[in-house]
Amino acid sequence: MELRHLRYFLAVAEERHFGRAAERLHMAQPPLSQQIRQLEAEVGAQLLERTTRKVDLTPAGVLFMERARSILKAADAAATDAVRAASGELGRLSIGFTGSATYELLPAVAKVAREELPDVALELHGEMLTPAQVSGLLEGSLDVGFLRPPVRVPDLNVRVIRREPLVAVLPERHRLARRRSVPLKALAHEWFITYPSHFRSVMHDAVETACRKAGFRHRVAQEVNETATLVSFVAAGFGVALVPASVQHLQITGAVYRPLAGRTENVALAMAWRGGDRSSVLARFLTVVRAHVAGPD
View 1: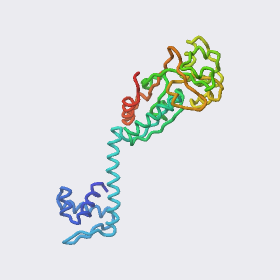
View 2: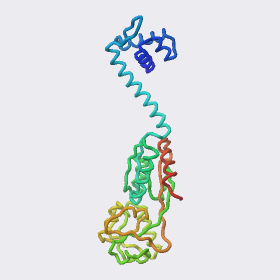
View 3: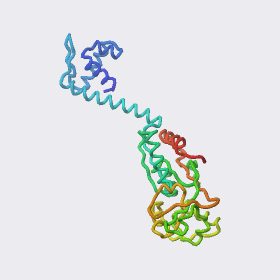
View 4: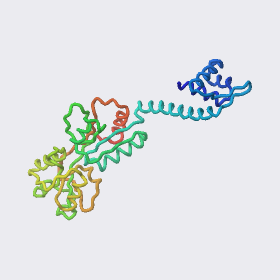
């Protein structure tokens, strides 16, 4: 049974007349009558009652007409969806966000994707360290990652989308909390809450480098994986921290953010995806992010 047979049948069933149905289908009446007889033989039931004046549906024909309409509607929808998928308008993407990008970039990406790509289903994974995102991209569990470079993996495309300064996170009762800006050297004797060193967190290395350039080696009170936990530990008075400026969108009672005085270290945020991925929906998503979310390199 072919889809064209269903279309022939529906034309006759809706017109109740072979001649009008043939005109509607832009074909001659004898071939149409022959196709309907072949369809009935294949189905194994009479679908139409023919008289010299009119054509009526048998009970089997009434049921068959309902099912035929559903099948053709589904077939048309499948064809439409295939075209939309090929153009990147329909599909699914799994996206990872490093912890410090979870609280500002994730909502921004979700908002613009909902507006520009409403039929693309997004799986958003926040608080993912850069090494975990790299593994997810290589394994295929992630399609896109928003992470902190450097990423030295030849199989991945990495494009910096913005750069931002480090800022200090202090307990609200800290001696420096009332200052408009904080010299990094003033934190030389503080205990730091940091991202993990054993996963080679990019942010851990960035903080270590910034402190070294300021003339001291930071003392680590606690290492944590998640940005929300890091800020919560600061709020509880366990230490201070350095984070990218976008983390200031995460407001936790007891913690305050202050810019660093003078020239400060900038950290890059990049978008990464598999180099061989030819997905149309991925290409469209990357274009949308570059146009609406990414800042100057």
